[in-house]
Image 1 (cartoon, rainbow, N blue to C red):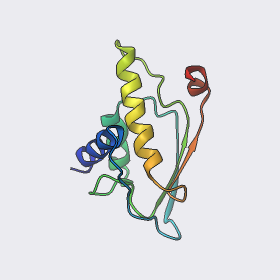
Image 2 (cartoon, rainbow, N blue to C red; image 1 turned 30 degrees about the vertical axis):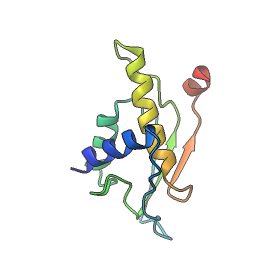
Image 3 (cartoon, rainbow, N blue to C red; image 1 turned 60 degrees about the horizontal axis):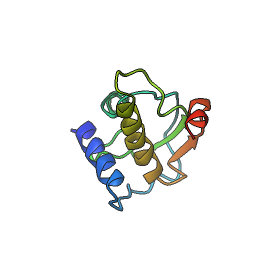
Length: 114
Protein backbone atom coordinates (compact mmCIF):
# COMPACT_ATOMS: atom_id res chain seq x y z
CA UNK A 1 0.00 0.00 0.00
CA UNK A 2 2.76 2.49 0.89
CA UNK A 3 4.50 1.94 -2.48
CA UNK A 4 1.30 2.72 -4.39
CA UNK A 5 0.67 5.79 -2.20
CA UNK A 6 4.23 7.01 -2.86
CA UNK A 7 3.89 6.54 -6.63
CA UNK A 8 0.54 8.35 -6.55
CA UNK A 9 2.11 11.26 -4.65
CA UNK A 10 5.05 11.39 -7.07
CA UNK A 11 2.72 11.52 -10.07
CA UNK A 12 0.57 14.22 -8.49
CA UNK A 13 3.71 16.27 -7.70
CA UNK A 14 4.91 15.92 -11.28
CA UNK A 15 1.51 17.11 -12.48
CA UNK A 16 1.77 20.27 -10.37
CA UNK A 17 0.02 19.40 -7.10
CA UNK A 18 1.36 21.16 -4.02
CA UNK A 19 1.89 18.31 -1.58
CA UNK A 20 4.08 18.16 1.49
CA UNK A 21 4.83 15.34 3.87
CA UNK A 22 4.60 15.76 7.62
CA UNK A 23 7.57 17.37 9.30
CA UNK A 24 10.41 15.02 10.21
CA UNK A 25 11.23 14.18 13.81
CA UNK A 26 13.57 16.63 15.51
CA UNK A 27 15.99 13.79 16.08
CA UNK A 28 15.82 11.06 13.42
CA UNK A 29 16.09 7.49 14.68
CA UNK A 30 17.84 6.49 11.46
CA UNK A 31 20.01 8.28 8.95
CA UNK A 32 20.18 6.35 5.69
CA UNK A 33 22.32 7.05 2.61
CA UNK A 34 21.47 5.65 -0.81
CA UNK A 35 23.74 6.07 -3.81
CA UNK A 36 22.85 5.81 -7.49
CA UNK A 37 19.11 5.04 -7.32
CA UNK A 38 19.05 4.40 -11.10
CA UNK A 39 15.74 2.59 -10.91
CA UNK A 40 12.07 2.67 -11.71
CA UNK A 41 9.86 4.43 -9.19
CA UNK A 42 8.22 1.13 -8.28
CA UNK A 43 11.57 -0.47 -7.40
CA UNK A 44 12.78 2.70 -5.62
CA UNK A 45 9.71 2.99 -3.40
CA UNK A 46 9.66 -0.79 -2.96
CA UNK A 47 13.21 -0.70 -1.61
CA UNK A 48 12.32 2.12 0.80
CA UNK A 49 9.27 0.17 1.99
CA UNK A 50 11.22 -3.08 2.36
CA UNK A 51 13.65 -1.35 4.72
CA UNK A 52 10.91 0.31 6.78
CA UNK A 53 11.70 3.82 5.52
CA UNK A 54 8.36 4.52 3.83
CA UNK A 55 5.25 5.33 5.82
CA UNK A 56 1.77 4.06 4.97
CA UNK A 57 0.95 7.56 3.70
CA UNK A 58 3.53 7.27 0.88
CA UNK A 59 6.06 9.67 2.43
CA UNK A 60 9.26 8.99 4.32
CA UNK A 61 8.66 8.02 7.91
CA UNK A 62 9.06 10.99 10.26
CA UNK A 63 11.96 9.30 12.09
CA UNK A 64 14.09 8.84 8.94
CA UNK A 65 16.69 11.20 7.47
CA UNK A 66 17.55 10.18 3.90
CA UNK A 67 20.66 11.21 1.96
CA UNK A 68 20.59 10.36 -1.74
CA UNK A 69 23.79 10.49 -3.73
CA UNK A 70 22.95 11.33 -7.31
CA UNK A 71 22.50 9.55 -10.60
CA UNK A 72 18.71 9.57 -10.59
CA UNK A 73 18.20 9.21 -14.34
CA UNK A 74 20.81 6.92 -15.81
CA UNK A 75 19.80 3.29 -15.88
CA UNK A 76 19.40 0.78 -18.66
CA UNK A 77 15.96 0.43 -20.17
CA UNK A 78 15.07 -0.06 -23.83
CA UNK A 79 13.18 3.24 -23.88
CA UNK A 80 15.37 6.15 -22.65
CA UNK A 81 12.29 8.35 -22.17
CA UNK A 82 11.04 5.88 -19.55
CA UNK A 83 14.22 6.39 -17.47
CA UNK A 84 13.71 10.17 -17.65
CA UNK A 85 10.08 9.94 -16.53
CA UNK A 86 10.95 7.61 -13.65
CA UNK A 87 13.85 9.84 -12.56
CA UNK A 88 11.57 12.89 -12.51
CA UNK A 89 9.04 11.02 -10.34
CA UNK A 90 11.69 9.98 -7.82
CA UNK A 91 13.46 13.33 -7.75
CA UNK A 92 10.22 15.31 -7.43
CA UNK A 93 9.07 13.12 -4.55
CA UNK A 94 12.42 13.52 -2.78
CA UNK A 95 12.41 17.29 -3.33
CA UNK A 96 8.92 17.61 -1.80
CA UNK A 97 10.41 16.64 1.57
CA UNK A 98 12.03 19.29 3.75
CA UNK A 99 15.80 19.70 3.78
CA UNK A 100 15.77 18.31 7.33
CA UNK A 101 14.22 15.13 5.97
CA UNK A 102 16.07 14.61 2.67
CA UNK A 103 19.46 15.66 1.36
CA UNK A 104 19.86 15.47 -2.42
CA UNK A 105 23.36 15.25 -3.87
CA UNK A 106 24.06 15.88 -7.55
CA UNK A 107 25.63 12.91 -9.37
CA UNK A 108 28.09 12.73 -12.23
CA UNK A 109 25.46 11.14 -14.52
CA UNK A 110 23.03 13.91 -13.60
CA UNK A 111 25.66 16.47 -14.60
CA UNK A 112 25.98 14.80 -17.99
CA UNK A 113 22.22 15.21 -18.54
CA UNK A 114 22.06 18.91 -17.61
